[in-house]
Length: 144
Image (cartoon, rainbow, N blue to C red; front, side, top):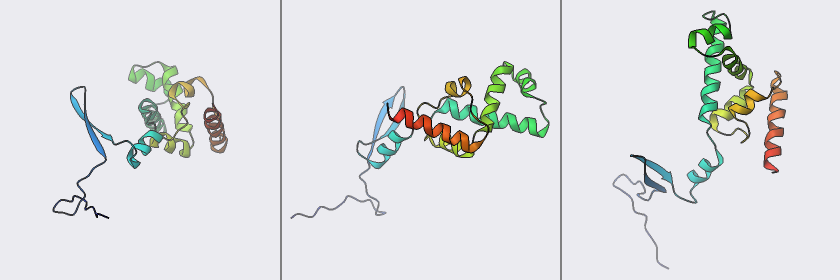
């Protein structure tokens, strides 16, 4: 048998990298190689940027109300130049369970959990009931 030696630089770091570089719209993007652990992790997570931004905005607006800077969602809507219904729908997101918020931030939320779903459907105020509801959604989507 022939022993193969890994190619390392002067610092002892392996030169082989499971990354690929591609040109996308005028900028270079790093893509993980197929079969790598990084590729599996990126396939499992689905970062929903609009949902993350909406959750962050909801917590910011809730803090403004708590601090007395704004009196209500309608006051915030007037200051931001938005519809009151839009602000109040997003303010509901500040009532989500911390576990659900964490899963959204990590990209581990159920595929069907989108901003559109959250604005069109109601969810309970109780965190344990919310978590059960979203677990049911995930189970239902997984069985499809």
